[in-house]
Each structure stands twice: as C-alpha cells, then as structure tokens.
Image (cartoon, rainbow, N blue to C red; front, side, top):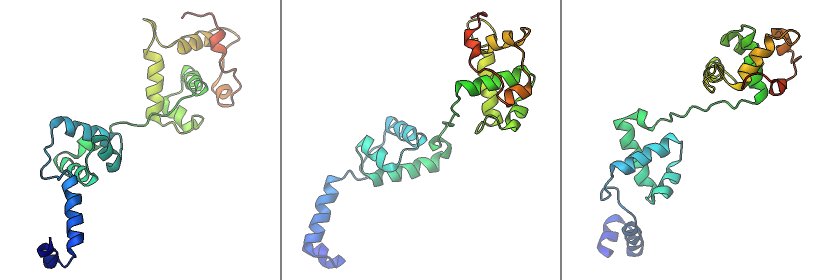
Length: 181
C-alpha cells in the first residue's frame, strides 16, 4: 500500500481504507446483469424511482445502478420512460356533470371548454365518458348513465345545459330512481 500511496500522492492509510471499501462493493465490471434484473430496472424507472431507491431495492451500489440506467437508455430510451399517465381523479359529482352535459348533446370539446370540470382535458373527458357509455351488465352503460338518461326523458325531470353549468340540478338524485339496474 505504501508503494501505491507514494505513486498517487496519498498516505498508505488512505489507500488501505479505500481498498477495504472497494472490496465490500460489488464492482460494475464484475457484476453480471440478468434479463430479470434489467426488467426490474426498467419497471422501477417507469415508476419514476430514484437511483438510490432502485439501489436499495436491488441491494446494489448506486453507481452500478446509474451506469446500468445509462446503458439501458442508450439501447432503448422508450423502455425506461414512464408509460403511466396520471389519470385525473373524478368525483361522483364531476362524473354526473359530464354525463348530464353529454345527454344534452354537448361534445367532449364543448364540455372541456366550459371549464366546469377543472383539470380535465378533452382526452380525459372522452375516456371517462366512454367508460360510462360502454360498461354495464349487458346493458348500454353504467347504472349512473342509464338512470340519468331515463330521468332526462321523464317529464318534469329534464334539465338544460345551463342548469348543469349553474349547478341547478340535484346531484345524486339518480341513485334514488327506480330505473333499470
């Protein structure tokens, strides 16, 4: 250690400490990556985990993780990008507003332009509307959609676009209706 220390201008004690530390670490060059580890790395990166978190989860040094991330990025940047789009959270009232406006013939873009559903873009509105229209027990749409549609066709229960935008409707009343489930 003294010879090495002299060559690099460090005391032998420092050289020995560094050597002891490096012996405890898994060196990148000696470590063999498996397909399973790469798959886990990609999963953690898509979940937007920091290299420190990945290192802790895989019990590897952070620098090893960082080097592997760079390698994987060079091979295929898309494989490390998050595919999770943050879906907006919908309250029951917002879903009812969406459906009531759709029932009175407003398009997704028109609903978005009213800004009554703050933070919801045209894509999110369209996705949520399709969810309500295309799911159900062999019937057309969710229970909320079916009951609102029946209520709209019932004399005395109709509403207008302005009623919904001004929130002059009783939200949640559809639950009490005895229309088809």
